[in-house]
Length: 109
Image 1: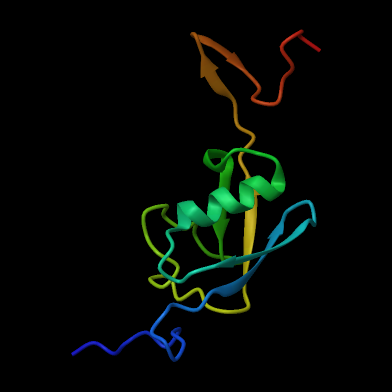
Image 2 (image 1 turned 180 degrees about the vertical axis):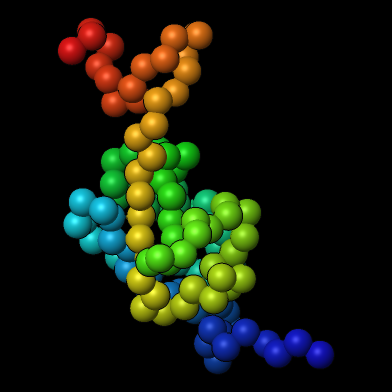
């Protein structure tokens, strides 16, 4: 029989956990989230703080592989006080058959 999650309060409501996220540029983000949340939901919150889109955000533990979007924080054993790294993908994307930098301005500058 599986053990009940240890991240509950006395009223059987899930307790939120604090996650520390550091970007490669040195920005530090603190996010409160529930252990049953998916990685993609955490990426959406981190993307809001980093002023980018969640599709461009890659979350991982230092020195490890990136997390999969569909799995939960509980699956990856991400708990209260866990530190994660955030990378923002800056690769080229193809739009209408033309390659361009995702950060390029529309007027060509």
